[in-house]
Image 1: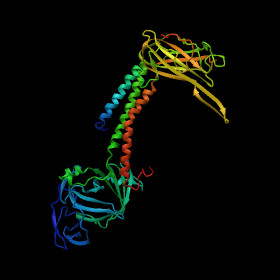
Image 2 (image 1 turned 120 degrees about the vertical axis):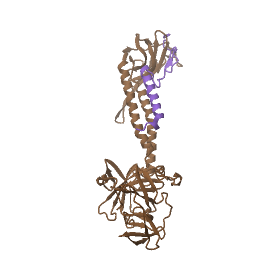
Image 3 (image 1 turned 120 degrees about the horizontal axis):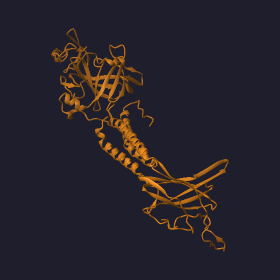
Amino acid sequence: MATVNLLSFPTPEFADCPKCATSIKLHDPEGSEYCACPNCKSFLRFNRNTATVQKQLQPIAEKPILPLGAEGVLMGFPFKVIAYLEKKEKNTVYRWKEYLLYNYDKGHASLAEFNGHWNFIVGKNWEPDLENVSSTTTEATFRGTDYRIFNKYTPTTLALIGELDWDVLADQPKTYEYIAPPHIISKANGASGKSKAEYFLGEYIKPEVIADAFKIDPVFFPEKDGVGATQPSPHYIKFDTLARLTMLGIVLMLIIHWIITIFKPERELVNSDYNIVFDKGPATTDSSGSITWNMGTYEFKPFVTSSFEQPDHSSALEIEVGSNVDNNWLETTVVLVNETTNETWEVTKGVEYYHGYEGGESWSEGSRQESIILSEIPRGKYHLNVYSASGDPFQTSLHITVRSNITLWRNILLTIFVLVLYPIYNYYRMNSYEKKRWMNSDYSPFDND
Amino acid sequence: MQIRPLRIYIAFAILVIGYFFYATLNGVTYWEDKAERNTEYNGNRSHSGSGARFYHK
């Protein structure tokens, strides 16, 4: 066990390698039970101050970025680097590096680096709550957060330098990794000397933070490759805030609308039925000599409605025209005339309604009423000039409704659409980022995509 | 909430909601149905024929 509850790092001591007599510097001489001889690569065990060779090690493949004995303050705690390990997943090609850190008060922690992405990992000596992790083969729960399975593997140690307090070479626990970026829960089943599963908590840490803590030039750190398992998504943070802001904006917009409708309620300015009369007009003679009245399109006598007042400073007007057309059509041109300024707005709208019974089924299409919305109609006295035409000369009814201060759904929907465009784009980017993250996992939730 | 990276979006949203406020207050539609201003109806419409017309102002 690492020496803990001290006020400072213990004074290093030296031990001789029994194989090559090299003097080996131990940074935690009381706590470290195993070490690697830097000269002959023997894996040594200390028992009652006697060192014995346990195994022959392979030389490390890469020079460690953090040198043994380097001191630094990380996450607010002073650490000393006491071991560097090169590991791999059994039966795969995936390799990573670990640095064992020693703190004189709490004991060991570690830094793990894979593809340029770093995690700071601690056990229950740092986080006693790790006793309370609950897990299945697919998820784990810790402090109310759900972690999703990312990887299952058995680690093996290929090479190491430095000192440890356990036989890492014999230690090949079945390991489950669950992630909830930027955190990871690692569950080790069958670790040497442990009868039950042991949990570790990791957190993504930027290489610049490590470089700053141990006073190392960041250029020596490996380039990041892809998205790390626990790398926090910048899009997720953004999307989370964006979603809240957008909801806030939409609610604000609806409140604005609601308040304005209190002060400017919808008004019905015209709501009348009109009798329309077919206007034969001047007769014409066709090629056969028959007298006709523009057959197929029958125009009705135009008429003028009574005057009405639009009392608000400026308002949107909805003009609705309706008729009880039956398997026919009626088109109406309505001219809104300002009686003071003679300003006019001319609109044309047709209604048509057809129905029937065909192939054992009833069908219908079209509508017996249609509406038109006019923008920014100023205060004033108005009337309507109405010109109708239909395919049915016996059409007799026309209903006209004019409303002001109507709810402009097109404005509401367009505003919502504009507000959600960027969040949707951000969601897309967040999703792409997560897909890249899960490309390194056999348990990707995006596998079916 | 991390507001800072979203300041451009926030400024944009304020503009959009501000214009919505102006439009709702003044009855401005974001797009208007087809309407012709200050015309004099002269009978040249697709369904028009030889019906009686009058100067509508």
